[in-house]
Image (cartoon, rainbow, N blue to C red; front, side):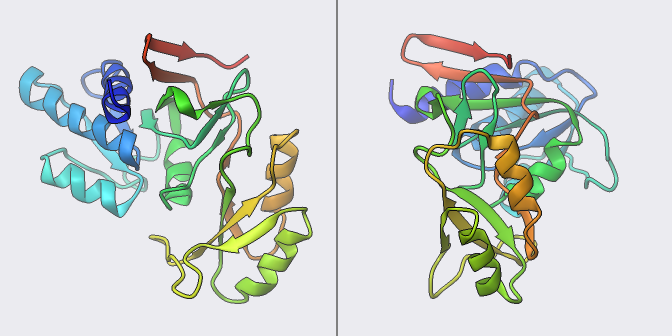
Amino acid sequence: MDMDALKQKAAYEAVDLVEDGMIVGLGTGSTAKHAVDRVAWRMREEGLRIIGVPTSSRTREQALSLGIPLATLEEEPALDIAIDGADEIELGTLSLIKGAGGALLQEKLVEVSAKTLIIIADESKKVDKLGGRFAVPVEVVRFGWRSTQERLRALGCDPVLRGGDDPYVTDEQHYLIDCGFGLIEDAATLADAIKAVTGVVEHGLFIGMASRAILATRGGIEVLLPG
């Protein structure tokens, strides 16, 4: 089974947890895309009725093309469940690095509003400590971004503007600075330190948010719980 098939398997397992009448946060990225497809399939084949709250313009366009009814977070501020992928999942804590796809701010706003956050991924995303494979994406205000970058550097990272000379611009019209910290011993403390930097809007450390992670492995489905 190839990697995309594993992602699809995890996504389908998560969408099976969605019940009729739920408000559902729809994640962004290659794995979350499979979940949105599966929600539409269940609506069509099983008569499932849900309202989706997308975490990016890309997901919004996908959901609309599939006929999934949508609402904004302003219209539906309390969600029953959210389903999304992750770049890294820390064993034990289920702390996450997210944001490689560029949608971390809207993802965090939607997912912190959900009673249950289900993370879906293939087995390669499981790590003992965050930071070994992915930098921490940090969304920053465009004005004065170079000075914000230097304040982030002072935290002990190698900060790189995503896109370089042609900077990546988020849905909220901000820049992303990818901060390579290496292995992170205390993700919660680092999260607080990044958030305190002037010019930072949000970061890709998702701490204490995931209810479970559903991983598709070559040996089958593996469910991770916090603690």
